[in-house]
Length: 513
Image (cartoon, rainbow, N blue to C red):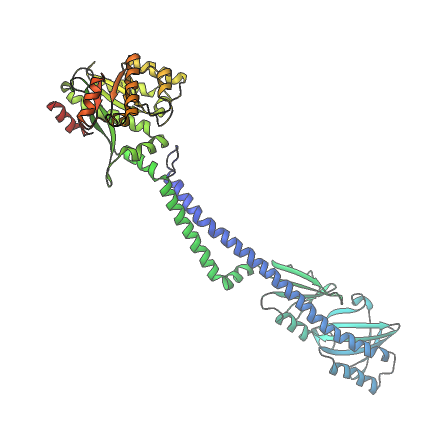
């Protein structure tokens, strides 16, 4: 279960992370859908423009064929036979609205006027002399016409496409895209009107395609907001799925934050609620079995889980950096509970409290110990700090100053679980230690394991040579008690003499002893 030394995030930060975790997938999903829709519309307009070019090329192919067949008649008299040929092309060729002949840049015969019709021709009106998008003629004013012109010397033949066919093509080729037919400076939209202004630029999926065979181009595109309308029409299920995954991501983020930060946050909550309480286990003299002190052990009275074992929360407290304020609170509660019964304690009553490497980073521990001792009459209590080895205590200038100040205050130092940690001998060399506490694993092997008993004897001998006090933990049988007493062990601690108990029960048991 992950922890951070910085502790849990603030509530607003957690809510913000949850909100972002839910909103960002939705935003990214919508962006992806938007880009996909935009790309789809761009492909659609490109295909639409291509289809429009094919359609208009087909229309112009018919005008070109009509003009090619009529061109040899240019210059001939506009008699019945010539007029019949003009009308025949209009009849035979799809999309062809009218046909006309010219001689020396002057129209003289037309299928529309029943014969002779004279009108000058301005080649500059035609793009490359071939194509002119015009806004009607005398017969159909204000109606678009696309005129194809074919010339050879003085001869000229014309074939025109009615605006009706042009606008129908622009309207029907695509359901979504808007189309423009542009010939030179003139352009035609689906409204059927020819304009000579600058053609509009489409806001969405603008695409331009030039005909490879005739001098015109097709503009295709869509108005502003068409992407959203397309998404609304085509992607409702996908959008719902994006929202669902966004909400799911938000819920998952909230759960992960709650899961990842709950141990530290719960420890902080419990610390503020004074749920960490002291339990007292008696320590007796090895020779007389008189109660000479106690080790203060931390227990967690959880409102829902009940009494929580220290091995389940002490490592978390050390990892999260909360062990220091938790120990300070424990010392204050211990002083508050034991001080009223100071008269019941023998002089120099030992009170053991565990400390870790986290307590040795500064000198605040000295003030905590001074405050603890001030709660008792002078000399009534001896405070023993037991160094645990879950974290290595480095021999720095701060730690040396700390231990020197503690000794000057009358506080004693013990190495807890001696013989099991990799740094026990290092602590003896670097720090001024007063007691060794033999780990219960060695005590448990008395009478069962010769090797462990030899190690136990060596520890006892070492303490005697170094003139250190020694405490044996985990004493549970009379055999163990008698063996340790015979070896000159100063103090004994274990279930044989009492389990860890609340203060009231401890004081009651103390009176009976």
